Amino acid sequence: MSGCDWSHIQRISRAISKVRRENAVKIIVPLLIHWKLLFILLSLSSKLLENNTRPIFEGTQIIARGLISLTCTGVMAIPLLSLTPHLADKGFVGFSIFSSMWNRSRPYFIANGYGLFRRMTGVGNGQSSNRWGWSGLPPSIVERPEITLEGIFEGGNVTNQEQEWTELDFRWKPGNIMKLPGWNVPYQPRLDWQMWFAALGHYSHNPWLLSFMDKLLEGCNPVIELLDEPSLMFKENRHLVKIRARLWLYDFTRLDTEWNRRIPGVVIVNKNASFWHGMVRLPEQVWFRRGEREYLPPFGKDDPYVSRFLSHYNLVQSGTDGIVKKCVVGNNRCSNLNLTEKGRLLCNFTESVRETNMIYAPFMTVLMFVLLKRKRQIIGSAGNGLKIKED
Image 1 (spheres, rainbow, N blue to C red):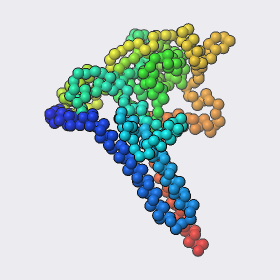
Image 2 (spheres, rainbow, N blue to C red; image 1 turned 180 degrees about the vertical axis):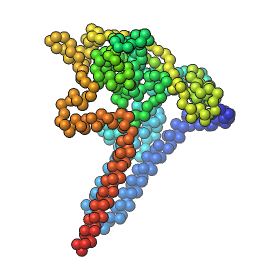
Image 3 (cartoon, rainbow, N blue to C red; image 1 turned 135 degrees about the vertical axis):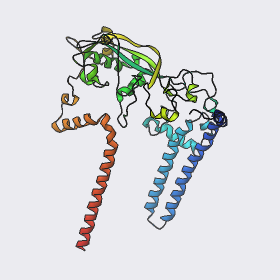
């Protein structure tokens, strides 16, 4: 946002301080909870007054539904009190009763605090002495930990460069700094998702990662297909002979604006371009990374330490002739499952839509809903016509 009035932004940031935001939350959250509880009570009273001439069991049903609504609202409001440190001290009407119910319901995971993304991983890890950021805080410096896998290939038409360490790209997670993030919603990329959590800990706490890397060395096709463009990375009978894992700190590159230029350590792209031109033109480099270090040392196929490690976690099967790796052979997982013909057709269908084609799932759902609704209207109109004819 080149050319913006920095003095005006600084006045706003001073006016909306962190303390004032927390004080506003302390007032607004209990107010909203009380309003919700009051709304339920008023609705309950209104329903009872409307049904005072009806049988008593209908009034009992209304009271039961009202009590259930009050209980659910009160119990699910308890996690909201963890938004700020001292919000729970104030509480709300019936807090002690609902708090007791919430503690008893916690083993069943009915209502929980939204703690996973309350503070985004890697945001604000970097330290800066500048205090010009929003609300008088230092600017946000992102250091998102990400694991990258690197391998050495042999066989086929392996270039001299591929005989050295070559990075293996994933389909969804950050890796290649030139690759734009893909559209995966509503598909949940479970492998890429787990790689994020593995980056937050040690490989000894993530034995599945060693199993995954070991299966890449084994040449397991269903595992290789989890990577991005596996046919290009493992084409012409090429295979991995060594693999390792590196740990980086990732952040997006930034557009060339006055705000971003003041953040220390960021990479600026589309330099000297206007703001709108920079927004429209895709940058060549999407990510930048730093802080490389070893996450898992190199190992090759049938490494004895890896075999013992995986055996300890029951991730390989020991036979009479030694360790036998569990690897499904074949390019299509559906052909290797013991399925009926209809089950295999359904499996093949889910295989074809489980990734990029999943973007069409919401539109197909809406289309099916419209068609079903139209079908019900046709059946209803036909039934009404038959009834009129009979009369």
